Amino acid sequence: MITLLAVGGSAAEILDVAAGHPSVEVLTALGAEDALEKLARNRRIDAVLLLAGGANREIAAAIREEDPTGPPLFAPPTGAGPIPGVRPLPEADPEELLAEIGRHLSGGA
Image (cartoon, rainbow, N blue to C red; front, side, top):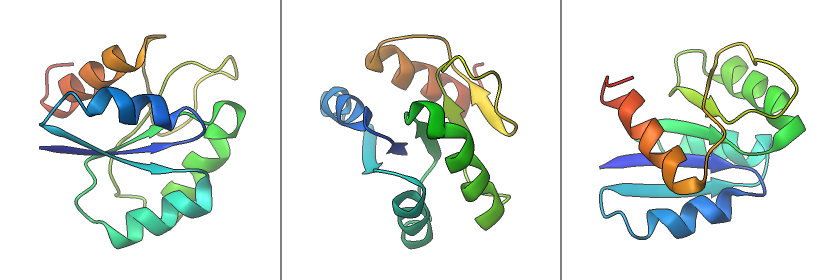
């Protein structure tokens, strides 16, 4: 079972796709504060997927400041360049994003 925290307005799309995957649980957060609260309350989160576009950098910084050894952070490209501490994902649909994160977590990428 993989528990993923999807942060941002596009998180609902990931939630819909994950419904078809019994081995994936997706929690959602709207922004940095919501994400920090969910991470503090739920230590079983395996990865964070940033889907907040231009706010990804700010959210990643807040998460790493709060917990530098927390779960890995992932984000698809936003045009703002690489974000320190965030593993880049290819431009992909939600199904492929979940698969790519699964590969990273299992050591396959």
